[in-house]
Length: 376
Image (cartoon, rainbow, N blue to C red; front, side):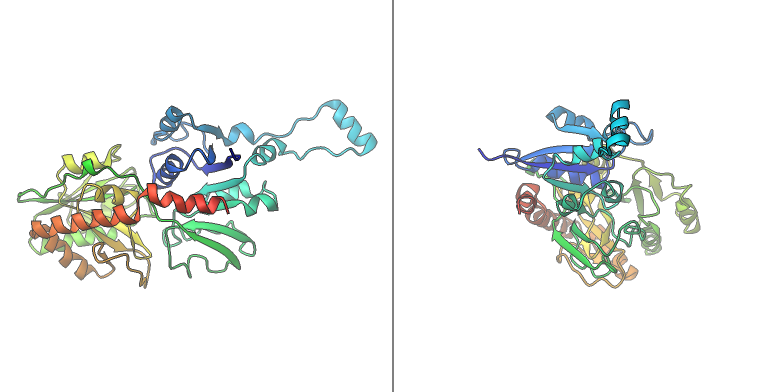
């Protein structure tokens, strides 16, 4: 049997976020007969009291080999004899970061999950290591403008992303290799069970971490306009973060939405919360014309209809007709009213979104793209 390709995944931590889910889906699905996988976490367990290390226990159950940066990023220690020999005979000593360098030398390929993880390790990598490194983009520059400030744009990089229109994303880079890999999840047909309910007050859900990188202003304005149209509707916002600290509550108050926006906090089980709280539809962020992230895909897996606002200026990309991506507030509101008022239309859209995600974002199929890339 041929030797396995040794893959080192580098993640920032094991929290329940999009980047961590991206890694979990890839590591779960990759062919373990052909690939041997190891994970290096840049943060220790328990590094943030507000976030549980959600995925760590799941890797532990599977027996995935895991290391922490602090464990291996140690200074090389030398004996007194070695130091004397160096002075007397000009003997070369190993680099001071040899424990980390020797650790990295064991792997055939590197996958950095999150563009922010790469600069931390890059300074210790040889040119040969860099050619074997792939960087998964999880934030667009429209979310985090400083994404690539720590990159030397004259160097060559291997990027992986679910984006297609990348002229602005990689502006200033002189040589990049971009590999398309769609965000992907596993599917279970038994999960499909959403049906709209006849009720006076409609509930819209929004799943997002509360952060300056994920703006909510346009969604609050849309809720305001829906209510001005006479719609009895409230917005449940699910996700970690302090809405007061981020100034979100100021916007809620300015639009007189105090009684119509509910901050539900982080949800361990997204699908369970959506079903138990009887959401009528879900709003999501979009970048480069493509709908949402993993939260969006999970919602599609049960057939709840979704509508998207694109935060990429002048983007002309279009995923497909079922995933409506807007950057016109009036059209956004109009389409939401159609879904909230016509249950048959809502069912149809939810069903078609499910079929689309199952076709284009099925990890058991898409993992073949990643495996081919890692064996080139």
